[in-house]
Image 1 (cartoon, rainbow, N blue to C red):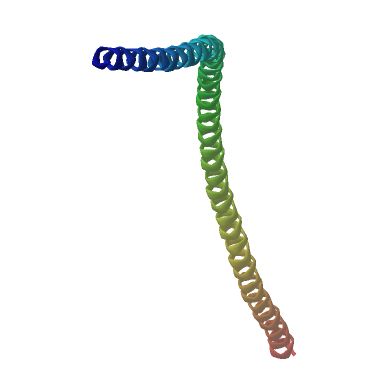
Image 2: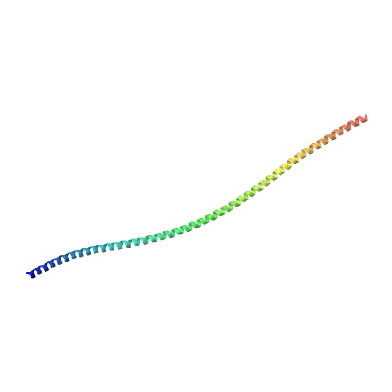
Length: 160
């Protein structure tokens, strides 16, 4: 009977091995399923990554174009700014010239006004001198008239 018991043990081991093989097969099938899902996800991820990379390249190209356009606009604005600075400088120079001309005109006007005042002063002095000379002449004429009257009276008085 001992041999039979040994045979029974062998049968139990065979059943255990069968159960273990079944469990291993189920786990292997589950792992294959998960591996398939992961491979599917990987494929999906790779596709999305490629789409994102393509989108990024398109956007990079668009941004590069925008950057180039912005640089062109900046250069245009720099050129325009330089032209405005030059025009402002020319305007400042013209204004400075006009200011200098205005100052020169003011100086010339002041000199002319001074000459007018000098002329008016000389004319006033000349008028006063003429009036003084006229008074002196009038005084001399009065003295001559008085002398003539006195001489005439003396001549009439001496003769009579």
